Length: 344
Image: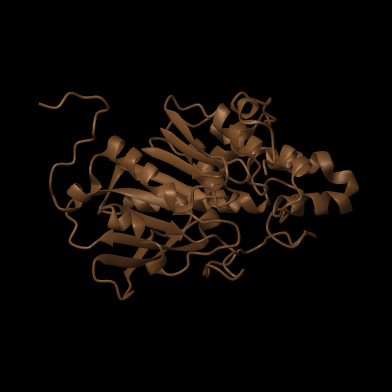
């Protein structure tokens, strides 16, 4: 059943943003510090048993220069710098195994999959990146309340910084065209991609699917589903910390990042999604500042959203914006497709 407002109301939902005055300063300082630490990204060839894809085991410096793992996949025999898709993973998942990420390289793109620090042990995608926790304060089991008392120590400060540095690593690779990098992900990965789109200039596209980490306060008020219930349980216990917690979360809200995004965007939302309620997704979408944006609505789906049905829509967007990646991989013409252009 529908878990939120009717679609007509969702389309018009534009809540006031709760944004700290030093939001931009906080993130500028965080990213400058991260970029001043660590060593260059390492791309080690990896034998994944695949004949049509080159695979590299990636380690790049993330937050505070801490090592973050990932996979980098290239269409084998590709020539010239390629457009690249940087992908972020859903809540609880890690980078998994290379053969679980073949769609974008099969379409002709370079593809960097970022491991999510501390995650990857919940039974579906294995992870390889630890999360050094500098504070160790009490938290609800999970990741939503780790370091919640102070934005400087909040878990997603580290994750979002890692995610920006993943784009830096992709852009620095000689087989990637740094001007043609897009970001995507589902659920937590969608929320991460939205944050990156608000923090990184010059992205070719942002494609958040059923994004998590948006409009936190409303989410805690309308859904009983995890992971937002981690926040509810924390605040149920720490009764005097409500406003302090939401102040921290305001530095990490996808609604505030959306207001700073300028890349073309394709969102997705599912109207029966009780994990990332539709009004939280539309709050971010309606505040998205990019001149070109669209949202795919899946009326009878839950948190799976469009699943595999969303990929062709994303691929069509990138083909229009970036040209035929498969042709680029073969060294053929790569000009972007101009919408409604007359063909001779």
